[in-house]
Length: 162
Image (tube, rainbow, N blue to C red; front, side, top):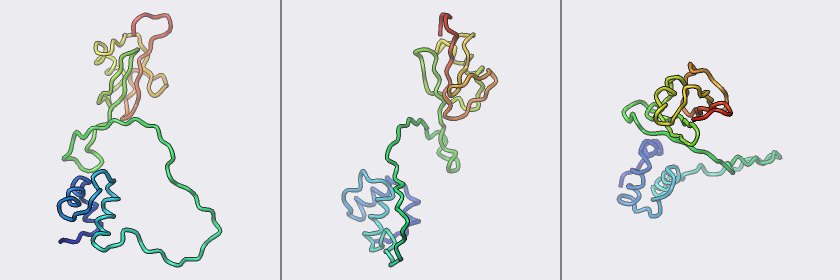
């Protein structure tokens, strides 16, 4: 049986680690675990403690601060579009665009609001008089969209269409 260092294990994907647990190391119950948990189990299986042993340090009077995340509400959309690129530049993050009841996620980062309005006028029924609103703020047609922006097209009250 081969022994692995923590660095070697961290270089592998979670899928590779899970496969190692099942086929090579006979460690059950890792199919739905996070990567860091799997690495800890593999290291413990090899006789390497996954956490540093506790030392006898003097206690302080400072209160412990709970730094766990207790709640989160989020929606993310990124796609692996360039797997050969360097780390951090492999995905495409979309821009959310809506007009009335129509909406969609599009790869529009670095495009102007005016170009998007022209491009999506038929798809989302964007009226030529509609105002571009990015992340809740009115913008001009020359505004350049950033990844994760939310773009809405709104017409003033009393106007038909969009």
